[in-house]
Image (cartoon, rainbow, N blue to C red; front, side):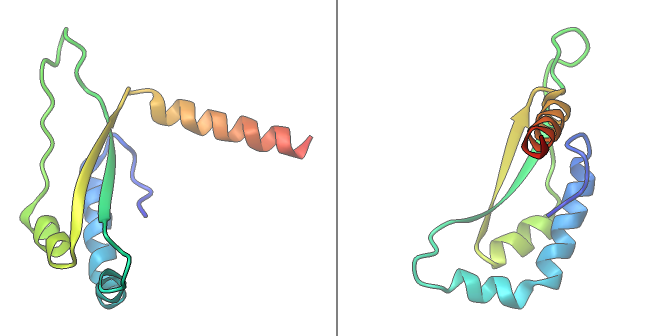
Length: 102
């Protein structure tokens, strides 16, 4: 849904707000579909805690996102990964793609 880096939660949030706004009617219909029990927005972020410079990590979701998501029945999830995980996952995907071509 977002092309923003895991290091840019604010970019992901902006993309999510735009997505919820642009697709509000479809998402509301989807939420009312029988069998749909859980809808959530997942925000992957880099772990910034390193115990030398950063002792705690705080991430913020603005009211516009929270209210739009809540009105459509979405929960919000924050997935925290080691700082280099996004790069490692991307490299792994490239390697798997190259292996399939060979």
